[in-house]
Length: 260
Image (cartoon, rainbow, N blue to C red):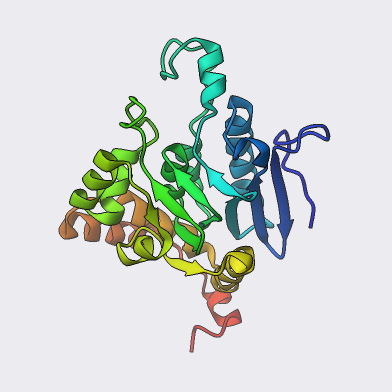
């Protein structure tokens, strides 16, 4: 199971792993000695890998995970401190790409397999994926305000959509950890599974997606994203327009036995 993403990793840098098997791409943040804190290079490499998976006709689903013991907390704060500048979109010539946006831009179903602590920028990345599967050892928190910064990868838009405004405010104001079972209860994650079986279960979910994928899958996923926050009437209009613009592949339907 080894197919490197073009320009995403090099033989002497394995901080990001990229593998494809059975039409499933698995991307792993692989800097466990630094708790998968993401350097600028890692963030850029992640964006490149996501684009490579999205453009690959041999991939129908993508899994993003981390090397134990954690998922990630987002940016490498030591690198930020060493730069001596804030990570603002303007004025920082060494600014990296936004990996959460790259997740949202990925048209193919994207599963975030959260293997441990997932906080701040890491939580924004997870929330930007289509599905979150959590290990029973996973825990989540938004610590942006606690460390004195404002989120920049979408937290204030994404978190209330997942758990509701009141819970989102509580998570940000307290910076407390939400553990796996509570995360499932409040709708932050789709599934909680035993830690040792996380990747196996994520691959199983991805395999179900692969088995059901048609050209309409990515298009429908995009409608969900594009209509997020719209009224029912507005969202229904978008759906109806998409259907009017869609060309049904009747031959493919018959091959799949769906035309009966």
